[in-house]
Length: 108
Image (cartoon, rainbow, N blue to C red; front, side):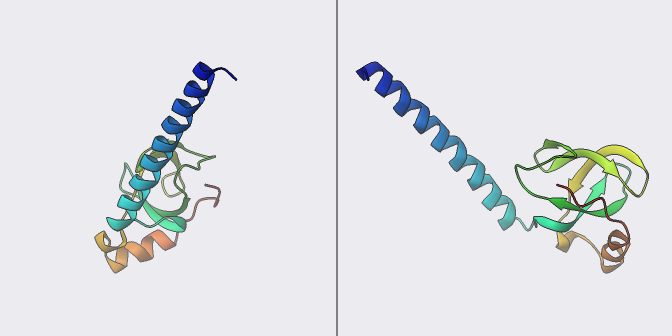
């Protein structure tokens, strides 16, 4: 392998490592801010409906990801809309109860 090829491979590996590091750093910061990930997390749609969904960072089969906002189906209002991940501490017990009544299909 020529020296130029080796340098290009090294630069590519470094760029990938930095990109992955930034992504995981952002996820850690988001967790520190009080957001929860995984199954049965509460989201609010643009119309204010609350429901539970599966939210896994960097994984999405049913939604278009835009950071902490996703474009996905709202089972409460039966519409396609922007939904935002909610922090548990920002919700009242009544809002948590309302959200628990509605679940999407469970696919991230």
